[in-house]
Length: 84
Image (cartoon, rainbow, N blue to C red; front, side, top):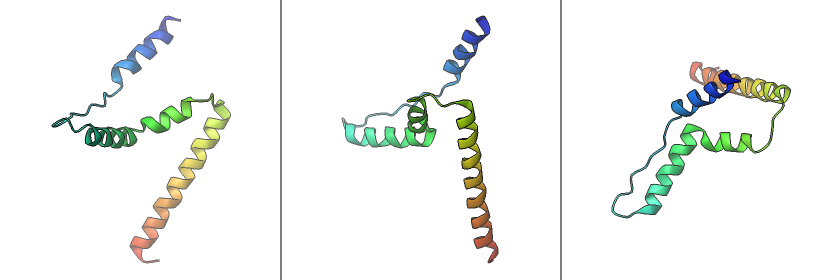
């Protein structure tokens, strides 16, 4: 059980802190910057995935589909670049 807690402590330390400076009381601009940073970091995607439990078999299936989608996109770009 001790290793389990240690794993989560390490993850907490490694997690990146998303921080935005508010300049001249412009909160709207700071919020936009924060949302953009969170989007880039994948925080929104992680929050959505953690809403409901995902069975390991479902996770494996989803990750496989995502990998195929990425591969097809790269192939499309390669063909466009090479002039096929």
